[in-house]
Image (cartoon, rainbow, N blue to C red; front, side, top):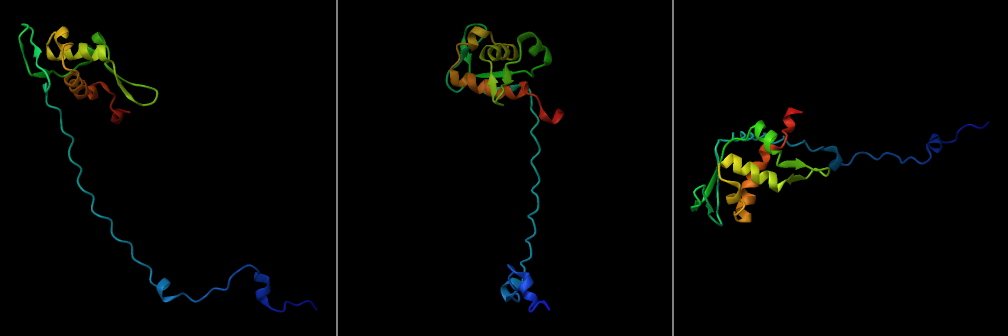
Length: 143
């Protein structure tokens, strides 16, 4: 009695598949990935670190205006224990330099009296501070 007249009626909403076109028949082969370049080896710090003062000479411990570069010895844990950590990471993940502690650490590591470092050109002071800051940050590789 009620036999389906055409089986396509039961596939309502489907589109009849067309034969593949010649363009679709050829699938492009993926290109090979370029060879990985060897990563440069990390440069091992050589101590003492020397930072040239480009803008203004400072006085040495004999009050002579002759110092045109600062040589910093390698910091140790005892320096942080005695003078405090001059660098911290705030809640936003920004690296913040504590200027007073950094000036004290720079004096200790260079052997130049702190009042003479306070007479530095600000650009030279920042060059020294930013050169030293990575040594007071944690190394994520240790986590």
